[in-house]
Length: 298
Length: 319
Image 1: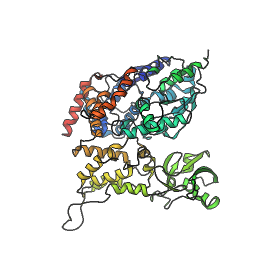
Image 2: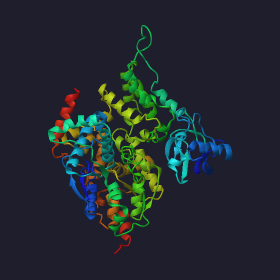
Image 3: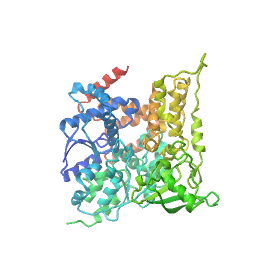
Image 4: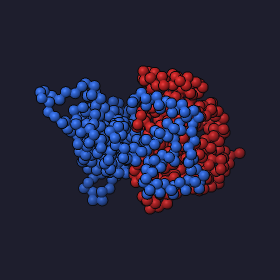
C-alpha cells in the first residue's frame, strides 16, 4: 500500500505531534509513502474566498504530481480533505475548466487527467486497510475509555464532493474507529458542527463559545477524550480550551483532544513520547495512564 | 412498511416549559414521506401532535424540521430512503428558532433576519418607458438565490446562529447577495459596506457548509456569502479582520507555497492593534512550553518559487 503523502501545513507547523504520530502508525502498518514536498497549501477555503481559480490551480497541481507518480493522495487533515475533494469535484465535471487550469501547469510539465483520489488517513484505515486487519496490529483494547468523535466540517460536507453516497461507511468512520480500539463512543450533536477555528481571529467571542460548548458538552456526557481527524479543530479545541472554558463556562479545560493516529497508536501500545502526547495544551496524562493500565495482549 | 418515529413534543400550556419524547409506530405506504407519516399519526393516532405543512411538494417551505439531527423538508424525504429497515427516525422542530408547539416554530426569527438586508430593489431611476430591462444572463445568475423558498432549514442548522443570535444568517445573506448582483439595483456599494461592517455580517460565517448541505433548493447560502466577501473586498472594504485574514492567507501561500501560521495570527489581529496582539501572547507561550510554537520564520515548500510564478500568471490574467 503506497500513497503520495500530503501532511498539510498544520501537521508540519502548529501540530507537529500529528505528523510524528502519523509516521509512527504508518510505519507499523507498512504504509509506504512519498511526501509531496513540492506541493502547495490547499488554500483551506480561505484563499478561495479571494480567488477560487488560484485555489483550484494549486490543488490540481498537487493532483497532477500524484498522478505522475501513479499514487493516490493521503492527507491528515479534514480541511485538506474537503478542500481538495471540492477542487477535484469541480474540475472532474468540467473538462473545459480543467483544460484552462492545466494550461497554467504546462511550464512545470504537469497535466492533470482527473484520476487522482484523495483520502484522509481515517478513510485509508477503514477502506484500504480494513478494521479487521487494523485490529491485528493492536496490542491492547482501550476498554472503558470514553471517546467523543469530532469530525471537522470538511470531513462530512459537502457530502457529494466527498462521495458519501457511494461510500456510506464514511458517515460513521470515526465512531467505527473508536469502537475498533475497544473504546466507547460518547455521541453528541456537536460532532459534525464547526469548532470555531475559521473565525478565531475574526470573531473570537463566537469561536470561544463553540470550543466551550463542544468540549464542555462532551465532558458532561462522560467523555475521557475527544478524537478528531482535523488538526485545525485540534488547534482550537485543545489550544484555546483553557481560555474558552474559563470565559464561557467558568470551569477548567479538562478534555484532552487527540488526533486519529494517536488514538490507534495508544491501541498499538506506543508510548506518549512517540505519539507526541506531551505536546498538547490540555494534559493527556489521564488517558495515557488509563491506556497504560489496561492489559497488553501477548 | 412501518415507520418508527420518535418525536420531540412541547406544549406551551405546560407551565414548566418541559419538552418530552413520544414514540409512534405507523404502517405507511412504501412511497410515504416523513410528512405523510406525521399526518397519518395526527389524523389517526394523536390529534394533539402539531406540525405545519401545506403544499406537500417542496414548494411552500412550510414543513422544515429536523430529521435525525439535520433540517429537512419532510415532504421531500421518503421514509424508505433513510430508514429502509424500520430504523427509528428522530424528529425535532427546527433549531435556532422559537418553538411554538411540538414541531412548529415561529417565523419571526427568520423574517427579522430577512428584513435586516433591505430585501427589495432600490433602482435610482424610473425608465422613461416600459419596464426595467435586465439581461437574461444577469437574471439567470440570480437563480440560485431566487430558488429560496424561505423554509428556514439553513437558519435551523447554522452553527454561528447557535452561539450568536445577532448573526444575519445564511438565508438573509443569500437574499442580500441577490440584490447586490441585480443590475437594476443602485445600492450595491452601500449594501456591501453595511454587510461588511455590521456586527453579525458576512465575516462571521464559519464556512462550515451546513447551510449548503441542508438547503433543499440548492441555494448554497455559504457560497453566496463567499461571493459577497469577494465583492466587498473588490469594492474597497478592507477594514475588517476577516479581510486581513484572507489577504494574509493568500499572500502567505504566494510567498511560501504554504501557510505561515504565526504571520496569519498577527496579520488578522492587525499589527497596530496592541490589545489583540497581546491577546495572542499567552497562547504563544503555552504552545512554546509544549514545544509546538509554529516557526517564526516560515517553512517554505520546495519549489515555492513556482507557486509564486503561478500567482503572477493568474493575477496578470485578471488585471
